[in-house]
Image (cartoon, rainbow, N blue to C red; front, side):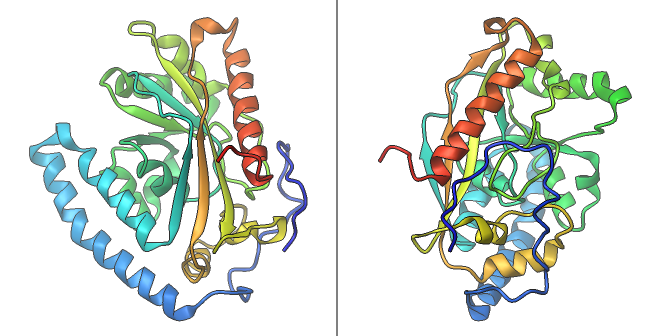
Length: 286
């Protein structure tokens, strides 16, 4: 396994071609993969009608089942979540995170009750689109001429007391770096004035499999990006053993602490990149 130092930021990810979905995983068990995916499918299909019922008759408790579901999914899929720092307790709160994989959703969702901000295409994904809707995901169109409308949608959810997760990179990446943060959707931070919006940067890093550091070349076994096929990647991942993921919650910030939205975006990007580098380099506190 490669132990090369991670890159923190990049403009492009095209220099690292995605692993072929049909490629041979260097380790793992097909029996384990079949067992995990069978249990995952059974649990998901069983709980989906329950969440629909909750949204129909007890909408204020929409978060309870997804919170428990994500914890259970992490256990089923062998995700060991290590938390560094403290999640913000203030509301409204916008969590600003890097994005490595679809696995980020159960990882973050298992730590605290959250809803996610996702691109509109996610709503059309087979299976996962339904799951996103049942968790009251805020779907946004990333075209520039719709920014104000998206800002209003996010603003309304924040003011209702929800904790929202935003992935300002706009896409997932290979897990070895973060991509430039886009400041446009952070414009919602300027719109929430009373009570003041808390913005908390969050770093996600997948660091090891079965206690062995996950090097540069094998990190795409967990990261999902580029032209990777979802089904093939999920099968390959499910065959792995126990995967450690480090989630670091950085110091909270507020819009008034910065002269502009771009400065706030830069602050979040620097904090997240630093957290990813420390986690991949094994430099986190015990």
